Amino acid sequence: MDRRPEGIEHNKSVAMDHIHAYYKKALDRLPPELFPSLLEAGFCFGFLDPVSNIIANTVSQERHKRKKGKRPRQVGAAATGTKKNSTDRRVRYKAISEIMESSKDFSMTPKPRSGSSTALQRGAGTGIAVRSIRGLATFLTSYFCYLTIQDALRYLRLSKADLLVAVHLIEQDYSAHTFTIHDITAKIALGCAATSAMHPEVPKFVSRSLSLASHVDQVSNLLPKKGCVAHSTINRLSELFTLTKDTTIDGDGDPQMPMQHAISRMQQFRERNTTVVPVGLDYSLELLLLDKIHLLYLEATSRIPRHELCSRHHRGLLKAGHCYGPFDPVTNIILNAIWYDTVFPAEREFEVEMICTKRIARTECHSLEGLVAYVRVLFPALSTHEAMRLRPLMPPLLQHAIPALLRL
Image: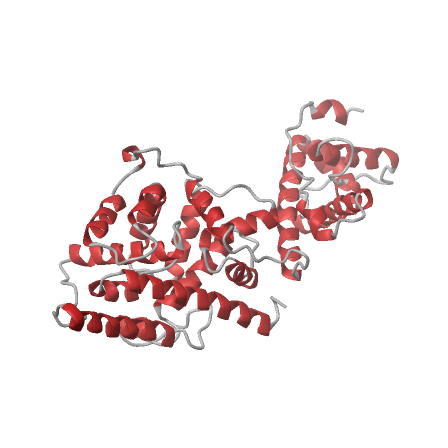
């Protein structure tokens, strides 16, 4: 369902509804003079919760504009009391209406448009909410290189468009490593997301997001769940943008702290159904495992002397050099190749200069099929997806010298 057109549209629609809800909450908490900055670069993605991301990115954009000498645009007449509250409500309603109107009939792939930058920002399909969902999907497909857009939209629906919650769900399904903000891949993926969302200052956005993530506890204490954000809070946020790791205080700076906050948020709305696994999830997980198996084959071929590999063992490697067996995967590949050449010697030996990647990919696919089949025979209750999630392919270092084996 998630890969059919109606399923993709459903995921997009549900994720966008959550994004609209975040912008409504952010608009209720921000002073009206910051609304223009929100509509320009107040994205809901980053390493905080979505509403905090919107507020922080809005403050960052306002700070950037003032540094350039641009005076903040007045969005309402100066007034006090009841009249001011009424004006603020109208301004907020106009802003959320603009966000929702620009989200109609949008595509996940931005289309080039003519006209000024202002017209581009306010055109259909190019509003802040649409650019945010594109940035969210781009981060996921950049950080998890085998994830498709369809898979990303599914996880955005399940996570209620919360970036780090989506990352955690993917890590659970793929048995992947634990996300940290110090991972260079996370930094690159965030830059890709900002570029996809047409952020005006990508490098500064990345550095400021990382700075805030390093002080996530302080930011959480600064931004209460309800009530308007005070100007003193905005000034304090601006100070946190420039803090570095060396200025971390009060125990902040744990690279896993943003993910721990995301996990606590996830527990509040865990509605996942784990009984049905989409076809796309199996496919992308298979690609991930094949990539890991390919690394094992590169390790194995690097440990076989070049002359022996090119003159004799290339045949055994392609015919029966599977990574499953009683030893670690790299040893199994080498032993299986040597065994095949010994038991079924070639009628005529010939030398090759190289081994085609496509040929060895076939052997890698057979290795994965053999591993999954073996696990399912041992544990019949497991599905193919569950067997692949066991990840029986962890590549330990080879302990023994290979040249001695080649002389057997």
